[in-house]
Length: 192
Image (cartoon, rainbow, N blue to C red):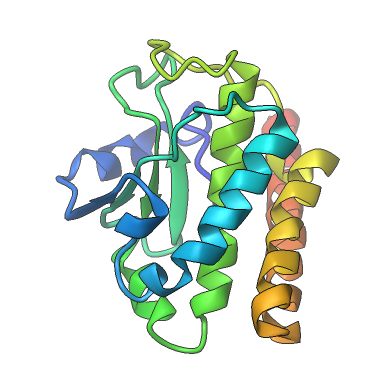
């Protein structure tokens, strides 16, 4: 799974101008089959808000189902200096929904949690201000210890319900792979 940083990949901005096909504004609004995991995802969200020190009334992230590049299953999109017109939201590919209909449902829950952590950490960095015209993101999340800890924690929530070693292992691999990819991307950019 790849997280977009629009300053790095400005050509991909066009992808997010397509109209949304679905939108979730709470765990109960998630499309099938993720709606089956609404209770688990809501418990994780409540824990994540508390762990990150978010205000009690801090809103659930807006989640849109939209086409994404083939190599991207989900992304946290937010207004930047380069793309101030973006709404802060999580974009989920229809392919993710298809994968969730099969044996990868819990992995997709882990991927959603990954994007939720991006959302909450970026908003924390910006004083929890969702109305800011531009959000800054100074931290490279994927290799940040706190980001990795918060993302891996969804595995504990999944374990308590399903006792799935495969799901926990998949989430851990996703966290490590995201850091590895981010490290290589940063290395390439600094050598230019």
